[in-house]
Length: 177
Length: 174
Image (spheres, one colour):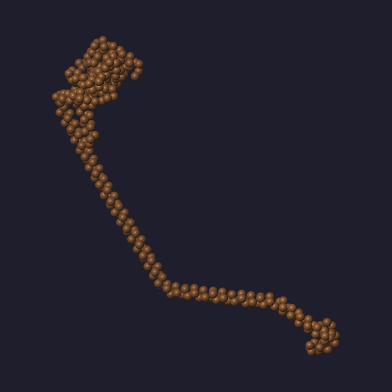
């Protein structure tokens, strides 16, 4: 207020900025107070809310950053652990590979042995069949030869008497029908 | 069976009936017919139109000389002369049927490896009559291919007592 009065006394021409009278200054002060009170009353809560929201957002971001940092540190720890256990992992993989190879090898050997056994059984069955067939053929051939010989013997020994006997036997056979 | 075959059979039957030796001639004709069927060469020769008919008749006479009656010889020569020798088996079959009808008998075609005596022939006819219940007229044909024994065919019925049949049965059993 003293500054305003001083400014007013120094310039000699008070145009618009300074009050022309002390009462005007009082009124202006009261009006200013009212304006500030209105601003405080209406603008305070939104500003406070905005401020609180920003604080909460920043707090959330800080929390997320902390979580991310913790995850990263955990991952880093895992990587370091894995690096530390790489020899063990390699040995484990090699062990599994050896076990798989042994299992495959055992399967192949078992399959080959089974196929060999089947082949032997089939060959034995074929041999038995061929043997039986050969025996049957031989038997038939012997029978055929014996029959051929018998036919020759029969034809050679069919003299008139035998022919007569055969005819007589036939007549008797027909008569007995 | 053609009309010509029946006409030839009728003509032959008339001749045979006139001569009175039906069964003998039928036997001989049947034998010659079988010989003709079994020999392509004989059939072709006797049916060859390029060979004079008297030459073909001479061939039949040479074949039947002393083995068949004059009636049979003449009938075969006649069929050869007319160029119908290939139809002789059909003519003989028809002649058998006509003879059987005429005498009211059934023809029994008997094949034997050797000739049957008159007594065997009579007894076989009686046995067949007793077996079938019909009057049987036996026609005997000597057929060495049956080896031994007798085969009788009456219509579709065959009574096979041949050695060949028995050997065939033996062969089948192996």
